[in-house]
Amino acid sequence: MNILMTMQKEYMEFSKQERKIADYILRFSHQIKNMNIAELAEKTGTSNASITRFVKKVGCKNYMDMKILIIAQNEPEEVAQTDSIADEVFLYYQNVIKNTQRLIDINKIEQFSELLKKAKRIILIGASNSGVTAEIFGIRLMRMGLPVTSYCDPLWMQMQASIAMPDDLYIAISNSGVTLPIIETLERAKERGATIVSITSYSENPVAKLSDLIFHVYNTRFVDNEKFANSQFSNVYLIDVITTYLMNNEHFRDSTFATREAIGDL
Image (cartoon, rainbow, N blue to C red; front, side):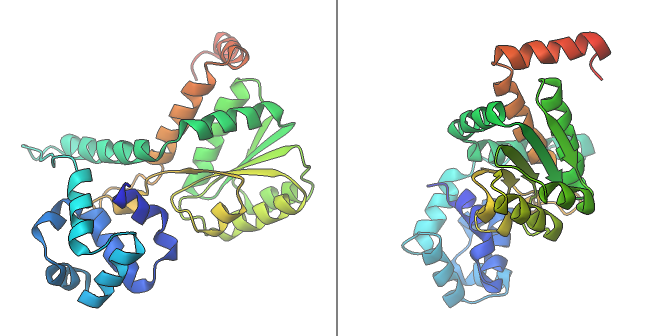
């Protein structure tokens, strides 16, 4: 198993103390190889007993078992040889892409493609930065000839959900999966029989629990740099992968090319 991705996906199920441990491991996984259990407890402000319980919760026999899995899954740490900000950002982008790639399931993309073809209406929703990403994804799907609308305003998305139909497809983008307007919108759409697809970071959050199909992405809160502010990079990478797959469909590809001829690559 990929122990680091397991920690992220199960993050919402962890207690407050367990989240402290997960936060540290996910942000500083390369340092774990040099730490014993007491040192990790000190770094995380927890206790040996808390770490032992955490280790069991993520499916490991003991601390050493977890440590071996983490070391095995960590690629050699890349250290920038200059103070270049460009190099620094490149390494963080590379890390986000690598970890999101580990979570991508091609079978889910195939299922998603079939849902798109069957849907009479496709509604994308997201709040704040995720709302911008939803609009970008919506434009791509619209250019493929699909019946798409996107909403980032809570009032509009909930109004649409109140008239949702069983052949509607709702696509929600929410890293945390706990944004209230998104949850309320999906609850209304679900009650009216709509199919729900979500892009989120965790398995056990309200948005994921309402979803028929879930795409997991790496959460950039675990990047080892507080200055890294692009919370949508993993979402955009996943959308690029999905879009590339969809372009294998002749109708989607022809429709996209037709819009390019009309308006260029705007």
